[in-house]
Image (cartoon, rainbow, N blue to C red; front, side):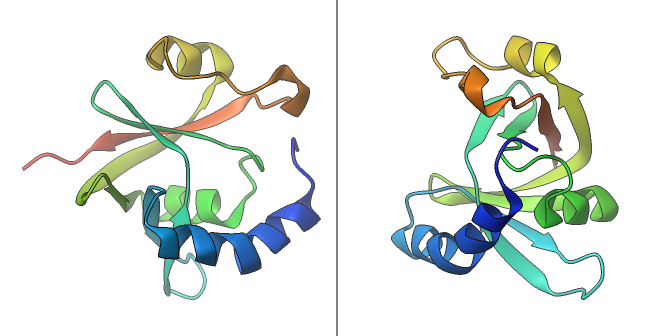
Length: 124
């Protein structure tokens, strides 16, 4: 896993709340696979053709990733609007980098991030 698990716990309990309150970060709204509770997770969401791509800084075993994969959908609040997302799937580095616009910075190699989550916009 690229980032240590303990840092993810600190992030979840301290920094995520501040990021959501600031309104500067896109927020993924998803349902817990065990609790059924609604969660709000600030993420770096990148618009790609027909949907969004998320860099999995903590890997695919993160709670939010497992929640979204189990539910098959989520909502994303970004840039003053909320959109529905569906068909979550893990993609590799090659597919992710091909989908991302050139101006979007790639994760530093030092982080060893090789997994990404891609979701499609729900239309209609």
